[in-house]
Length: 305
Ligand SMILES: [Zn+2]
Image (tube, rainbow, N blue to C red):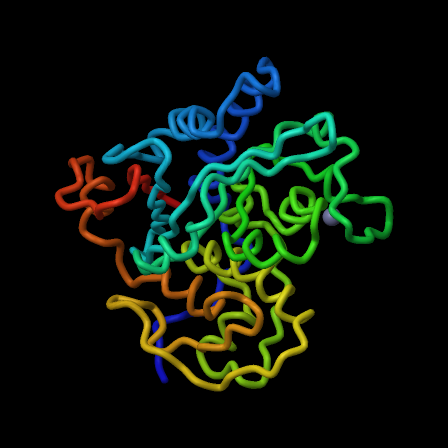
């Protein structure tokens, strides 16, 4: 098995893509600070985010508002990571918390497109999240609800799908617990704990998990992290089979172990990692209208890392 995965760079300079996403998140924080709980919607907030992240982030609308958008993170070496992102809202209600996550077909829609599903989670500020219960013990006084930069967060769609039948009313908090601030997925100085692969994960994928990554590979690894940790708590035997990834995939074979997830979780995320962006994303990067964007998505966004 071979791949073009290279070890990550330590001490890399601040990623402009991360800075642009921070600008977008701050604009969303300001936008939502003036809104009543019933007076905002995550689709509009996504527009605020992407507008404020220009020109490092470019977007192209090509479908209905409610559909997910294909996001492509593209680094300076040309490697790209794609995901189907759908806006979701963490809302406070009289009874507690509600996760507004439109539809339950996000994972399957993403599978059809050959990329992972991602919930783009709008969580407002720390005051809004006071009292949020994730149902998980925290030590050292740092509860996840106090997390900085979390106004706009991301979490693999598999997380909500897996947790929904298992955690009951703490689902909104539990999904938040496993999320990551959007701007952190590409932050060069973000610590990257080595992920110890299961014995059936070998070769380049095992190396990828164990070593720090940069650029588009870092974004992919950030989305693997919560699934890897949830997998450790699933006491089921791991499959040793491998499957062919998408054309242009960075990896030439991906593990098919799915445990209690609905799809093979490593393959689901890592097949979004490509040696180059698809033509429609390259068009958008070059400032052209995408020639042939996929059907069934609300739009395309490219983030230059
Ligand atoms: Zn937590």
